[in-house]
Image (tube, rainbow, N blue to C red; front, side, top):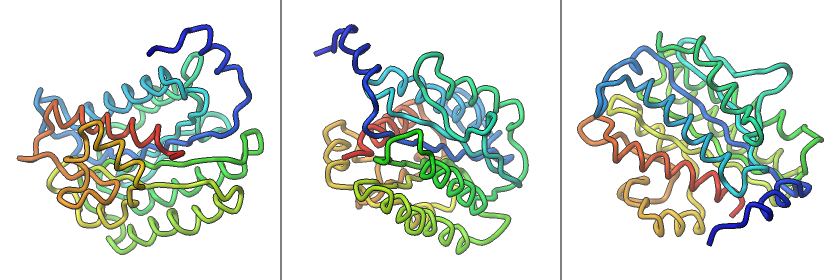
Length: 263
């Protein structure tokens, strides 16, 4: 049953008791310009559209006031999207998170290789700033979504694993020290068969039972970490081509994990 708009306005004015940080880590390497998609647009264009729709969906969610969204682009180098002193943005009112993402597109067209380890190091900086942010409640949840179609080229796969472990262990522990309820999850999505899918699965966090149940109820568990369905990992689309159905399933996967971060 839909919640009346008058009640939603009250909910949006109510003081926050917790927040959820979503960080999108986005591959802009040259291979992302390949048109391996159902409509022959580039993978980069599809990724941009996917993120835009997700951020718009977060803004329409009943949970909209709790969300903060940050972005890290990577290829040869890494760019953390900043606006003033901010590294993450709300989705309410004029949806600053969406506006700032769109502004970042001018400087983040596909080129170069794949500095995935450095990108994960930059995510830790965003999360640690979030931990220090005293304008937000101490109850804080984080989900990181890493999208890539490639393999680490600047450092090594072992460095990718090491940076991911720093994020999901050391940084997550700082989060828990702030409030024992706090949690951090890392989800990985392979955008092509050339992606280092073994490493992406290795660094992905395990699904919690409640999350697995929600994904199963939504008919999404089949595409999540097949055949085990244990981790926050989505393998590359079959035949190395992004289909409309696969793209929609990924969007719903990200939505569900964002909304169940507190479960």
